[in-house]
Length: 160
Image 1: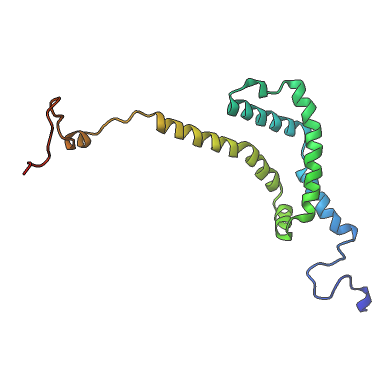
Image 2: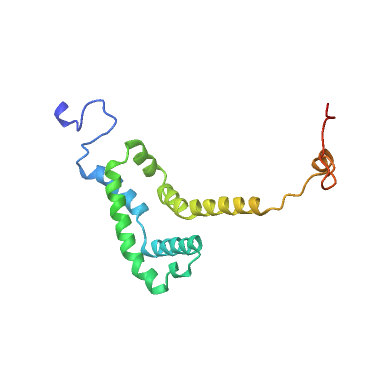
């Protein structure tokens, strides 16, 4: 009777990890997270647009042909890297990705799209704060002593 039980008794899993059922969850996840060539092409274009702005050099912008040339192989590379990453991800992260469809793709997309925009905004804010002319306040003006006539030394205390 016990010989018919698959896997260790009392385990949370019902089967052997090497059986086809265990691979179905991973292949289902892979299908949800697969990188589409057109999406990758658009992302690559965004990245090169960012480079053009970062270096203030339009030669970084991709032509339509260059973007098409890079889209498909980059998608294949990303899919391959994702498959390899699956084997080293901690179980909890893998389970989270399986239970939350689209989460991994969303995080990657945000990392590619939003993080550079945040960096750009920080740089813009810093430039604006440096370029903003400092207008003295009324309090700062009234706290300063009046200027002394040229050539006449000015003392804050009376000499003894």
